[in-house]
Length: 265
Image (cartoon, rainbow, N blue to C red; front, side, top):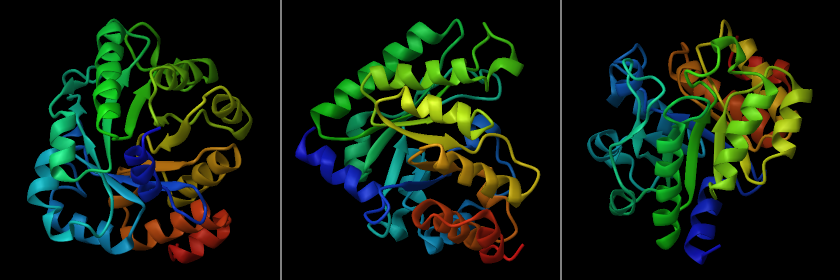
């Protein structure tokens, strides 16, 4: 590992716990301008106020919205995106040079496996890892087994999540963001099979904050290094308190009940 990559990873991961809480604000192209990111300036202010360990965003948001907060919190540049019309295909919309120019501490690349686009998307991911390594920039992948060659009900199965996460690790990715399999036992086997930092995706909006906190707690108990959440945070009534509650679980080993009190639920 280069010194530059080590410096940036240490900025991203909490120094006391060794874990990471990332808030994703990269949804507008993939999911549309949905509630919670329609007023992106307001949402950004709340997220920065709560001080998660990092924020993931596309380059336009970084340059136009994040600028007043530059240097106050690390950010990860999302260099690819899918769309509602091609949900399993991430196309490159930025490059490693732009991540460096914008001051990002890592570059994130989406990839879908178990589908017809897998060869192309893994090739793209591998190229990003190679280019990022040359400049000491860590890589993150949002990698999921949601391709068209398997049924939707199989997306969260242990063997498929394990395959997706391991594929990212085999390409040299530093932080693997993927689905939670639904229980500690199966997810712990995913973590054990992946020689990289595994973090949990928030996935679809969950029914309640208790569900969000329970998934977070169980994932951490299973060995995850943290979470990357979007809608489950900034669509909440009080996103600042939700982030504080998540930090309590992720960095302090707090319980679900304690988190609910912090979030005033």
